[in-house]
Length: 322
Image 1 (cartoon, rainbow, N blue to C red):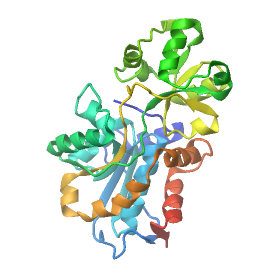
Image 2 (cartoon, rainbow, N blue to C red; image 1 turned 180 degrees about the vertical axis):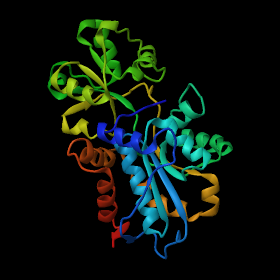
Image 3 (tube, helix red, strand yellow; image 1 turned 90 degrees about the vertical axis):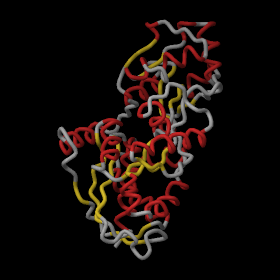
Image 4 (tube, helix red, strand yellow; image 1 turned 90 degrees about the horizontal axis):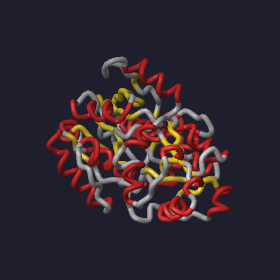
């Protein structure tokens, strides 16, 4: 399971809300109206539940989805911020939630059990879409937002090493093994699509003493302060820009594509096919730089994910405040 870490307080809130199951949640009470989306309120009379995983980006995407449904006339139950990928995924499979923004790479590798990612993002989406149909989940077309793994280095350190890609890291590790220290999450340190697979793919052999395991949020500060030369990051994280980090190119295309796309409980979409038309313009707007910007508002500036989602929808003219 590819787990991301959001704000600690948000994760704690999720546990309080969800307990052992998915029985709790809170209705969206915002007074929102159609903008360019939801005219005629095509979801009037519908009762829909949105969900998300418990990291900032996915919570924002879940709030965006819920607010659009609300503006289109639906009564919306907010069950975002569930702990881990599997909780939110199973809620949609079982029909306990109707929709979330999920990631094609997570589906292909974690949910569907394939070891080898597909390099072409559109082809990966298509095989996920086709295979997951049998699980009662319909994937709508993906965004270009790609929240994949990467390694990053502080610009200060990179002035010395001038690393551009992971092949450069492999060369440096061979030339000067002591120089390449890496801060990673525990999971990334053991996953085949994480550090072990990356080292094998790039023929990199880092001593165990050079690998430091820690929580995701600490990695960014450690890289920024020089505690590690390199750190595991997510390409859409707002802290990359805020902390002045260089993201190194995955020049041999090892890491999977994690493109965000709406994953809808198929029976819900059959009942309310208008959902696809409502979400299409949103998904088309979602890019990696936009995700960095929105995530930064939460993870760097401390804003509430719900308000970040609503402000963006209003700014884009998708909905209006009532």
